[in-house]
Length: 211
Length: 258
Image (cartoon, rainbow over all chains, first blue to last red):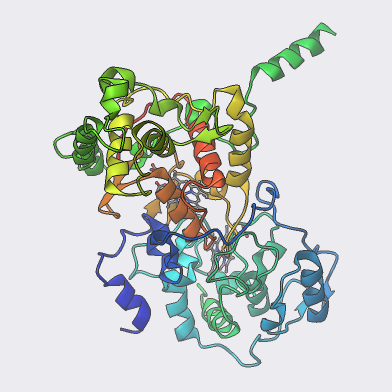
């Protein structure tokens, strides 16, 4: 099978969780096996609620048509005081997109499709799409069929990097940022959800979704 | 003038006020109503509900003398069928000595240490689950009233803030799923309103009984947040908010969930 570690998890000692049920254990616990362990409290009090659907202070997309990465990194350090921001590859937002590849080279659409379908990537928790082989798709978000008609690669890249720039209230996670978040699990702290290579593979795949 | 006073009265009468997006009382539904007929039948029939085995174990523990005091729960509380009816429906409840709300599990352990001089039972241990299932089962069908006590109001509010707080690497709040998107599907599985009516309950995926805290910790793990510890003030506050949010819904312990 293509995804070694994932496949072995899903066919491990316990039967695979019925799609999404007890999703805390089934989906993300793969990398975050804290559920069954007694943890000492590594965190103090939670930060006060930032309010329904809001996140920390955000840069306003419309007033920053052109934003350099230096400014982004500086801003996120200043706002959230998060270290390790430099682990993200630099990118430049122009208009409503990121025109240049995060890695400097084009992604691989075949790998991108496999990533979108992998539960650890989390896309099909919320989205459905042209994936007849998987019955476990979400309906919290638009169907991805035809996404390549509706959006340019540049827009798709920014959507994945930080969807909140299109809709500040969106529930879609920002896959390539790690500042401004609350109480991130210790195995995930300081890391983006996806790597630059993975983002590029997924962008390459989404761009092929034309009807 | 009279008009404005009428409005002011109307506003203060609707306590607690709902925030935008919160589910109005008449639209609140147990997770039971989201299940398929097979799982419902399993919950409804005591002879097929696996949670009932824990209830039976709990009944035995209720009558068992334990600790240095060598007394049983029954020695103080008598027949649970009378003395424990409705109790779980108002937990977490305010503890005067501690000055904060405690969960049913914590109450059981307080009784063990204060009255039985026994060691506390670990969270999610079979004995603690059995005892709390047995006690909560005495409230099956009783409408939930937890959170009505004015002394717990600040803790309900804290729980509500936590419920609305985005968290974890996926940056999602409980409310994003359980207020805004119930009836939709997450990776193919129905999302419910996250009502706490059936705990401790038998989850088929767990293949055992589990507490509400276990469930909340797995939702937190799901959004890749650092889960709060069992018994932490934050989990108790969340639990209390969830119970107050379920006000009027009948208790179902031991429920079955997929």
